[in-house]
Length: 378
Ligand SMILES: Cc1ncc(COP(=O)(O)O)c(C=O)c1O
Image (cartoon, rainbow, N blue to C red; front, side, top):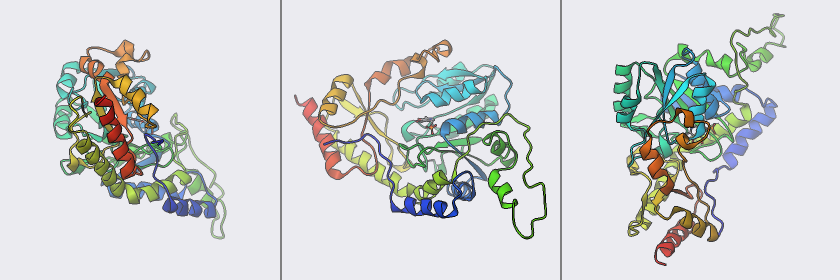
């Protein structure tokens, strides 16, 4: 056995869309990106989406959209991937780490209110592993404290909370289509919002500050009825980045979006099998309380007091594992910003992520469950 932890699920539909891009021979930011952005807005139920090359870029630009004065503070959870907090530093803002709830591994909203001070301007809730932050409560707190809310939806494309899609609760939602995520474009990300005026300028920020994209200008560069000599003209008024999505990525994304609900359903079924298969094992439990109805969990994790021993045992049986996540407050870059995240720093060393991808077979899941049982019956 050699069971991967994550694996993108791609096939003929993605290849057909890529062929269309090849036939057009326009591989950069072009019509496929526009099509994907529009499809994404319809799927999520928002007014505007902007495709970028990662969720890291999406989070960076989402904060940039607000033009917060340098040195203001942004609340982020202690357990998340680096990008949630590096986006804050890229914008010359200060991350304030909020502890996690020990049961849900989700941002502790009581600690958020304790850590808040008058310099805080925004909060980035992370739906870690797809477990939703209670957005109704968070939005109430944010309104009271005048905080902008940027949802980090890197783990929950297609997920919802109380009947509303994650990514549409806050002022801006940021998604990841990196190869391991709920759906993929190879690498990619999406910024979405209902505030068109806030988000539209980000199209220049993702394209090195240029106010017109090359595809639109190229269309005007030739043609019988085109008698405009200035088709090449553009203006650079902001300091932008090379963060655009390209048509190859968007082509994959369009095919993946069609499959997203089915893939999320499949992942939910895998998680259900795991939960059922480990229920007699008193030494381990799911990393957080998976609730079927929310429907978009990126990974299945467990907690074990013998984590490292179990990781090695599984490795020797051909089963790959991971740890999501080592608290950022323990990382050298972020230590200067760390204060009282005791739950995060206490619980993380029990976390193990098990193989959780859509193409896992029943016999592979059974094998993982059997191997866990074998470990605990020694
Ligand atoms: C919580 C979280 N936010 C942001 C990111 C960044 O995503 P990307 O790889 O698309 O930049 C990740 C990536 O794993 C993540 O886990």
